[in-house]
Length: 520
Image 1 (tube, rainbow, N blue to C red):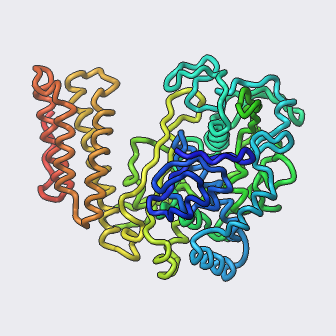
Image 2 (image 1 turned 60 degrees about the vertical axis):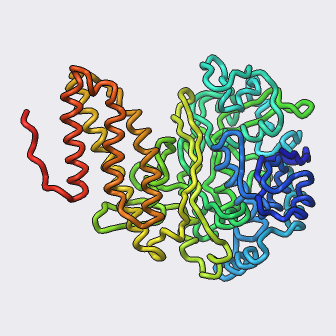
Image 3 (image 1 turned 135 degrees about the horizontal axis):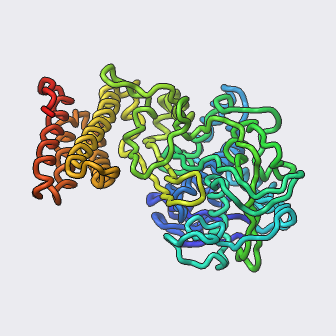
């Protein structure tokens, strides 16, 4: 991995496109090679987005916060954060035609503001007042989401919490805290007459975000910049934290005034790191608001009028939400109601044929954090990308394939429900007093892992997956019950409910009439 050093800016780990121009890579990223990883300072990365195809943070969830930050920078530098419809479309066409941001414009923007994590006056995305307002600093390990802090149990990372960390690790930790920080307790902070250590949860805590995934990160960033009239907006100037006159007031969190503030300024935690010789030895993490952040619709979440945004779950495959993302429907399927898909998808569906041709294939990239809103408990960060492109599945472009998306999703969910129902019924005949069904978690994991392959193959080939889905579901039932199916206690219950599973799946497929209820 190549490292490009510039201590004035935070660095991001990225991957160079395998087909990138070698001369241009050598000029912008000395020592890097197509297909290789590189640690790149923020302005160099923004200038070279067209040469890159992936963000590779250590914690995958940080990608969602980084993508928002980059989208804000591209929108500001490229002028996509302002103007009327005609002006915005002209700028988009120019950017698509050039395929990159102008290097001079990038340099001018990053030279205008402070991005140094260790700056003594305006450290990047930090609040210097915390050193005076908080009782005492925490060990640097507080920044690290996988490193146990305080008296919490050690699960993943056995590094002592007081071990110093480099600035690259600290920057990722700052991004994670701003996006996914938990509610609970932090540093005791005395500000504005309020002296407390209680914190609210971050804006993306336990959520999954959906981003455009193009052939390079520049096109992905462009599609992440819907026109300004498509974003929630409030009064006042639309500024990023580093553009504002001073740090945000924790006593009065504001409604974002536009896309830049929405993507970069929403945070429930305030952070400060103590840097010595390029290493973070201590930090402060404290409350950044005493009330919930003003409610706005984030442009990268799948929002529901009932239940709020879709929560992150590492067991929930993209197929579960893909029909809602592309608005695929079928008369035989109950479509999700009150669902608002990410704003960038609506913009994508309205692009001209020439623009779509220039952009090329676009897939959906999900970045989620499966976590509780409490500080304690397990958490799993994950990413996933759709095998099929958006254009290949949109109802307006490919109605037959869109129908398979809608029907396939519902059939998979019904098959899982029937599988779990029969497993529960079988186990309760074996152990009538059981409150926990030991087969459920294994069955869900195996089922969705295999259903994912079946679903995307059906979408690709535009075929009904019902027969293969029924066979796979029965196979999962047989596998999870195998240890007890031949026992004296389990033989009859397992066999009986395998029969009802088979009948239920066949009935779902419309091949046989409804069965009579079993005798009790």
